[in-house]
Image 1 (tube, helix red, strand yellow):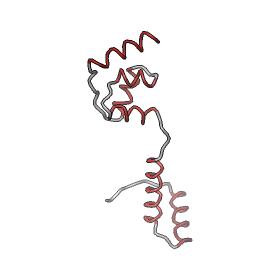
Image 2 (tube, one colour):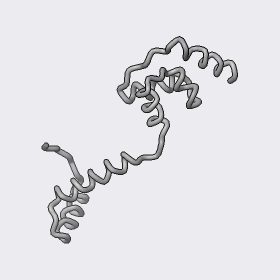
Image 3 (cartoon, one colour):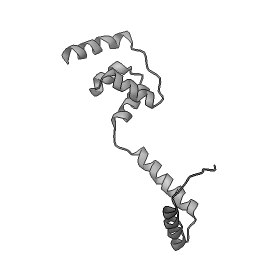
Image 4 (spheres, helix red, strand yellow):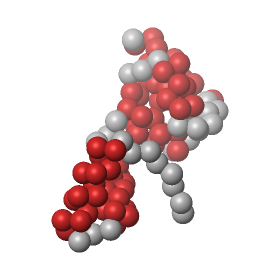
Length: 105
């Protein structure tokens, strides 16, 4: 795959010097860096966004996710939409839990 990316001259020269000193190709350095980034992303700490994603994947609706994470439904919907995920429908048996949580809050 071909990718076009603008690198400032100073950074390009640093990269070229680094590659030359080690006898490497610049593409090898970049590919290694991308792989390291992807590996770190796979082991990223548990964030609210990751938790919302996990709960949406499990079929939980926004209201239930909001209740579990201490957010409001609008915040959950914004995160979910940012992830490109569709909402899950609130099932009848889940509604009583949402009402109880709201009453307790």
